[in-house]
Length: 355
Image (cartoon, rainbow, N blue to C red):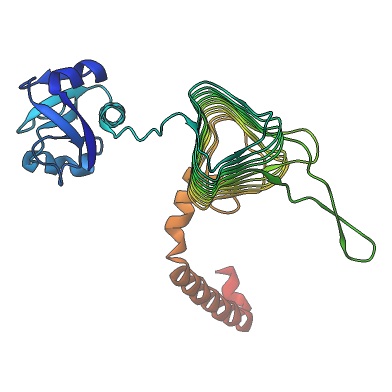
């Protein structure tokens, strides 16, 4: 459950854009699941898998689709219940924003430019020449290297590292432990079998409204830039290599790995543990199901699965056969044996071939 502010259902309906059915004076303060909700809670139904729980919920109100059956409590009707749920959480969630100012335990270089309303937590280090935009929050133990530019209304969580000369736009959220601008994996083989490190000096650019999950890494390249365009959402434990270009409003789910110099088109969705080879282009709207391996470029609108990645419909047909492969192998072996026996009999009686 989420505990925080209090709103009447009438106020909530007005602010979220829902149609209210029931007592508008009821007060709610929390958001909870249908199963766990009680008086004072507002719940929601966005997945029909849980539709049976609506009739028994103890919530004060439920957010439902426009055509959903009625609930035994007040109802907030929404064209998109999940989107209305998200807006409700935003309204009722606790306001954990720390006060503006710089902690005396932080180390901020003398020439750093801090916008109005910035909050810098204890043990934060900000290097020379960096710029932090208005109302941005930097939590404890974050390390911001020299020459970094961070826009307005960003949220940098504890233990984040943002390397030298990287740039973040406005309203960027970086979750705990993420590393932006670590060295790309660049080494040139030498005749003696050792490797010459290629200095990785170019920046990472993160555009507006991007979210980067915990312990994800976005590497800097030797030349050019690594760029994540506006609106993209990156889950935990995602690895984006040097020189990658991620388009607008892309979703990269947990443990996705993208090799160097690959570009991902706008609106693409790569599910958990998808791996993408280097120097490829994935077209706009590409979708890849979990654990897909992508070794080749894909056109716009591709929907792929498996390794090597093939069209999702073909993969579904193939996967249905996988579990039958032992039986099919035995059947083929039996047929081959019977065919060999028939051929042997025909060889012994050639006249039979003409019948």
